[in-house]
Amino acid sequence: MSDSAKENQNYDVVIVGAGFAGLYMLHRMHQAGRTARVFEAGSGVGGTWYWNRYPGARCDIQSMEYSYSFSEELQQDWEWPEKYSAQPDIEKYANHVADRFNLRSDIQFDTRVSEASFDDDDSSWKIQTDQGDVVTAQFFIMATGCLSSTNMPEIEGMDNYTGDTYHTGQWPKDDVDFTGKNVAIIGTGSSAIQSTPVIAQQAESLTVYQRTPSYSLPSANHPSDPEYVADVKANYKEFREANQKMPAGTGAEWLKDMNEPMMTYSPEEQQEIMESMWTKGGFTFVRSFPDITLDYAANEIAADFVRDKIRGTVEDADTAELLCPEIVIGCKRMVIDSGYYESFNEKHVHLIDLRDNPIEGIEETGIRTSDGLREYDAIVYATGFDAMTGSILKVDIKGRENKSLRDEWVAGPRTYLGLNSVDFPNMFTITGPGSPSVLTNMMVSIEQHVDWISDCIAYMDEKEFATIEATQDAQDEWVDHVNSVADKTLFTDPNCNSWYLGANVEGKTRVFMPLPGYPAYKEKCEEVVANGYEGFNLA
Image 1 (cartoon, rainbow, N blue to C red):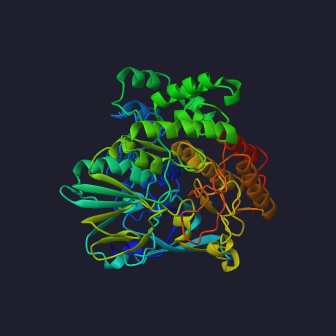
Image 2: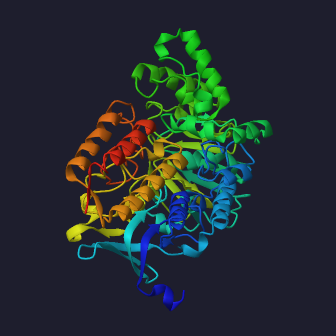
Image 3: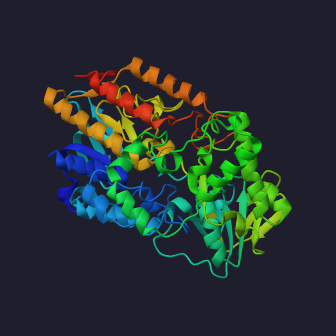
């Protein structure tokens, strides 16, 4: 990097992260004629889809929906090869967007933002990076994503292991060949469930270490249907508008004939409807009835349906029972798979249940559980992320009067609308905690947030405001609102240790972070603007 890159430069906006949020934020700033700089820790664009290149990595939202809507030309030109896109295709799309809209010149790769502090005297942010950059900006925007900070477990003896180790969230760019190797996977979340069938095709043996079984739904993935694609492209505006009205910003086409609450149907009708949704694949099943994530009785019927599917797929009865979750269905992020349960019918694929046989430590040659040592050539850690807040709090952020965001969020994140926090003026979090984010099609939430932030900055320019900051009352009321909405669902079931709650990270305060219900949230954001940015102090 040249010395000039490290000189103290001033920008209108500094953006952290070059995933889909950062790319669109930069594009909006270009359109507005603002100076902007993006700092990206990776060597390329794509964010989550740059880092998560593990075997079988695939999106769980249909391709025609998991895409930008801001450019009609982009929508019409881009072709997705499959119903559910694989990681390489999504990364290729991100690179196409970066090139098509000339974004790369304002992105600095291989650079982590280490510190950011607000200067009360001149109402600006001072940002420092691990490469020695020191820049200032009026606006500081965290586009770091909700699932981008890997969660590495703390297991005694990990450093002693002499074989190959991988984390699904930081997979090597070069292909990893497991042919002829004995491999272990620790974890049974989305990345483990997606990678298990692929690794099983290569490995001599594969052993999955399971702490808590997950519900996984069949993707029913297939090559893109040209007729379907043509129909969507001919009606993309209506297609997007319909999804905007859905609870998760997605799925309008397969939920247009939404069923009534489960108990209004006979047991036979319930089974028939769930079977139809199961066959369609994807998240359709969880939306079979509107009360599956609201009512324990309906939830248990749906959970039993999936458990019976597992028992009907996995040939060994004991293994099938170990793979059957006991928690309510939907309280954890649902997983979409292609052949996960079928993998356990292969003689070389094994399951270790850590509830009865816990890991005691990792040794030079393998993993020791209470029943002994098993040796492996490679260990894959599929242990997920420090979700929602992990990447934000990796940066040492100081607001007014040198207040630390880490300290302010020590008991859980506190935001207004998931966009801004008290004492941190002109700092925005795209799809931050307290917004629908991970409970939606992320592309929908990203565009909604970026548009809101961009319009807010334009409003401030027009009215000659220097800073915007949430009020204490508005933030307190919003945190209470998020908790109140979540408490009406089964997401906060006390027996469910989900990353929605931060329960997968040792020592992290347990609090539900996203807000269920996208349309109502969007309406609230529009109402705030209509009322002159109600709940914010503009100075």
